[in-house]
Length: 519
Image 1 (cartoon, rainbow, N blue to C red):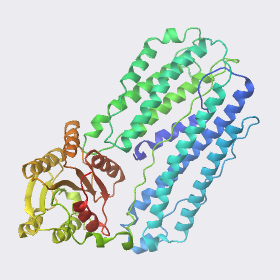
Image 2 (cartoon, one colour; image 1 turned 90 degrees about the vertical axis):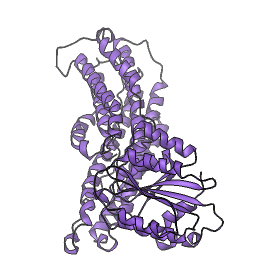
Image 3 (cartoon, rainbow, N blue to C red; image 1 turned 30 degrees about the vertical axis):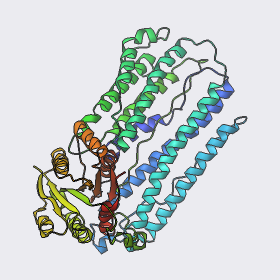
């Protein structure tokens, strides 16, 4: 999910977070605590670097999306990234802790790779090479950055777990009031971290089950109702005073309550016209809870040894201004010139005819590929067209690929109106059932450029149809990467294929779909 909408307030709070450390709770020797905190400090610095990198990439990506709409004169010198890569951090090194030192070096090596990719992008833009390749190399760099940031978070979490293991290997004295309270707070934060992971997974693949926050909500309610008992023995210093541990405790509870509300609202976002799962808003509430927990830990009296907890970074999904077109030699068309020896097929195209499809690389490109595919299919192969935008309508019903009406029906696909996804898929599915013939391979192929929202009941029917031998594939003619992630989830649920369409490969993949056996 793209986090542009929540970046500013999130980063403002980040600067407050970066002064604190990461960890769990325990009592241990001062030397071990100092070593762990040294590594945690380096870990937090790498989190800061990740945020700064995301800010740079967002600024570049925003301009890159507009690049293709400029004339030749406007394009020259238009794109900029930064004067230099982010400075490399010195990795943490502590005596007698080789395992943690090794983790710090691993993180340092990844940060070096990121800096090298930054320099490559700077050189590419500085030489105006993008004027020659229309950002193809720039898009490759964006993909590299997305992979780097995903790897960065993975290594940061692994690093943090190693710190926990080192600290947890120490003997723990009898816990006091602060340690007992920390145990309760850590339980809630552990639950919040689990829900956060589920929310991230769901955002990246909406075909997964919705994350459940009921258990976390119950834990948070218990903390709220039992605040007096949990904080027994910990003095209060008054009201809204930030130096009061009771105040920081209450603020942590508020942040976790907000997080559970956002998680429970994911289902509503799933069914809206503009699919935008608020993962980074959920993450912001999670990090705010961590912030107040760390402040609470910082108020513990001298001699009480409590480690801080770590923060998490947002998802970065680049918005590619133009998909890289595959080279002609990468697509072997010789395998797609005949249907000989294959069972008959019935391809049901569910076509988005809303106004957004009125581009040469969308609806007209589909019509061209449709004609090409029909020309190679046999007389026994069947074609259907269901258009959807407002009330869905079948304009072609199981007609032979060699009949003239198969081509005439394309004239009825004119872009206008708003979307009605649920009824559109149901119309295609009902047509598939009514026209089913023994021995035919039937496939529904969604043709769209934007989000395809389905309620839980319809999504379940789509999955059931796939189990019955009617898969749903998705051809994405758009450029919205958030929509692409959601459409990919629809294809996974329908046991079909998700294909990002461009002019170089549109004919190939449509005919390939006719020749793919059921999975």
